[in-house]
Length: 176
Ligand code: 5GP
Image (tube, rainbow, N blue to C red):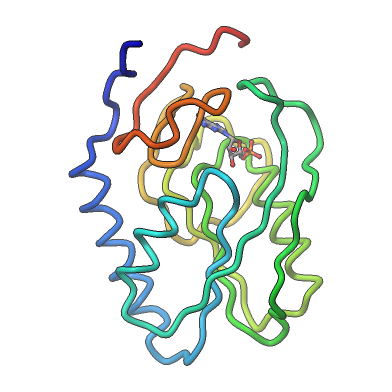
């Protein structure tokens, strides 16, 4: 099977992840605890690389939501599939997303996690499709802005394929 064309190379991703880690480490340097919450499944590789480059004390949690079917067509409301296991009350939370598209998922997550009473919530996404935004949601750290296209690789899939590509590529979904 042919590989998707490269949109963002492995080298460019690694360089940007290092820059984000530096910025986050600087912003949280006076905090003694930051909980990174990775949004499954798409953020698992980004979270692994980002978290290992941070120079501040951090712990890792995961949360799982579903907002799409098995392809690229939005199925409607965001649904919580797995909540965080650890207690985040009074702690500094950084949500780590793979991609923000319409913003519904991130907006839902912020509201949901806020109800757990954290000291603060910030958001970080590797990719942002600004032109597709439907809700106004604050993103504190953005890796790359991209256009309205379906991307795969570095954790992101199309129908569960291509998650482990080392780069971000684009595919032509057959269901859009
Ligand atoms: P939103 O709620 O912002 O519309 O969508 C966020 C979720 O949609 C992401 O976490 C991701 O699962 C999925 N998504 C949106 N655009 C893309 C894309 O181009 N590629 C992949 N693989 N997932 C996407």
